[in-house]
Length: 390
Image (cartoon, rainbow, N blue to C red; front, top):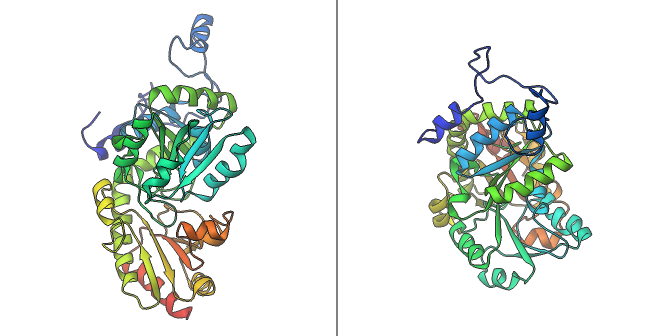
């Protein structure tokens, strides 16, 4: 529609109704009326396009997906009830008994549970590969491998995977590449431009941006979305019109918000890197990040998440969190309000300790989702908590 991200995010919306509204209305309806019996038949036969039932589609959901597809530069998409619904259905809809998934070793805790506890019930196996070891990726491809699933940056260690390399790797082997783009959003990174076949989002995070709703999305190739949509329509992980409406409106400010999140996060990371009570800091746009050059190549900004390890290990990490006065202690991220969490005991607690250590989730690791407050107040809060936890 437009040449620029911001204009698409603001101006894409449903066709105006007879009421002449300026802002998209809420379509809070479970079903839709047919003009006649023939139209009903044709809609159910997929001979014509249109709304039938909100579990299938809804104008609010349609607007959200049209907007996200435009922003991510993908052909098609589907909205889901949560980010994990998007992760699960993006893989499950395309797999069959006996298939194999090759995944980056550092994935979200619930994604790890899908791969290690749920898929084995259907005789679907998996292998993990270290992002920096090409030999592990090559050795991880089996005759029955169908999907490669990655996060970049990873949660919470903020490791970066070379999207160009993994895209070419998958194309050469005829593998479906799925990228979790939750941390970046399409404003910072568009995996489809680097070869991703599908991109998944937790709309709960930066896409909403204010911690109000649970939502997800799968975006990508039209041929793959056809099968994903069939499974979704039959099993029902649909997003409510209200939540679609909220996120679509939130996307109007996504560019501005991600600029501020990233600006604040960069300043906080630079401050922490010089602090004597910090062992090390991870942030993609810090020059000390081992994949700094790669991050600069494929990411527009560094994003809104900073991870760091405080001196004193697990006990000091807990004391630091307890010393925080106004940061929100919550497992969520991507909020306008700064949030803090201890991944080893919360979001990634289902991993074994040795599995956490391998992917950089050390006992004293703290993940900060840097909000939109003034950076001076954010730094002052971290500083007092570091001093108060000594």
